Amino acid sequence: MGEIAIGIVGGAGRMGRMLAVEVAASEGCRLAGGTEAPGHPALGTDIGSLAGIGEIGVHLGADAGALFAASDAVLDFTTPAASVVNAGLAAEAGTALVIGTTGLDEAQAAAVRRAAERAPIVWAPNMSLATNLLFALTERVAAALDADYDIEIVEAHHRHKVDAPSGTALALGAAAARGRGVDLETRSVRGRDGASGPRRRGDIGFAALRGGNITGEHTVLFAGEGERLELTHRASSRRIYARGAIRAARWLADRPPGLYAMNDVLGLK
Image 1 (cartoon, rainbow, N blue to C red):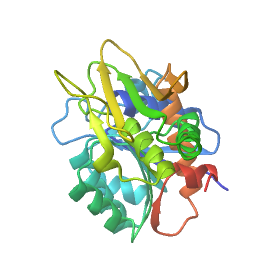
Image 2 (tube, helix red, strand yellow):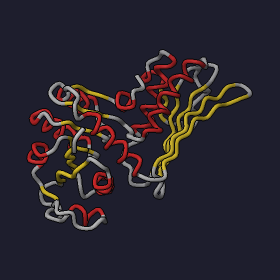
Image 3 (cartoon, rainbow, N blue to C red):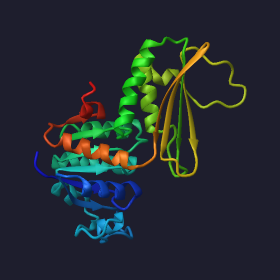
């Protein structure tokens, strides 16, 4: 595969800057550009300077449509509303899109699925390669251990994260539900308070912790009588998400339109 031109939306944000660092350091990749919302104070700034790697001659702009036209693939770790707009732009340009945004509601998710009919899109709640292996392990363990083993999912993130449970925690819950052959919506419990009563057999519980600068921690607990099994992933750097996103962008380069997951990228299906 030749050089791939990668664009970044939300280029001035924490994740956008990290993506720029990784694109610049990745062999066979070229930073096609980056965008921010009109009026953003960083517009016109060299993206390399924003990312702390020195000037690279590529400046932050406000024209997302032009970015999609100039890129082979675009990376999006923004907000649900912005990701829907970006998915539409990808569909118009036929440009590959990697979405790492979480917290989309059902209408927004449907818009992404419609856009994937015209452009190849990888949408994943977590771009970490190891976390996606955790999804697969969770499904297999849930299938092997019956409802005598209670499933609880505990996640922790930095104080700035706005959605809870995290998209990764919900994806782990979905993996556990698939393994058990149950519907997550009817079996999930999102936190407990007061006289909540005894735990229902077969429920999948969630707990969310927020504080400091925790990058991301997820544990799936299978608790039975006399023993428990814990599957845990701890992230110590946001670079793991950037690296996974770039791998997804490379994989998408010659794919037809469609909605893909990191399982597809890693060949886990």
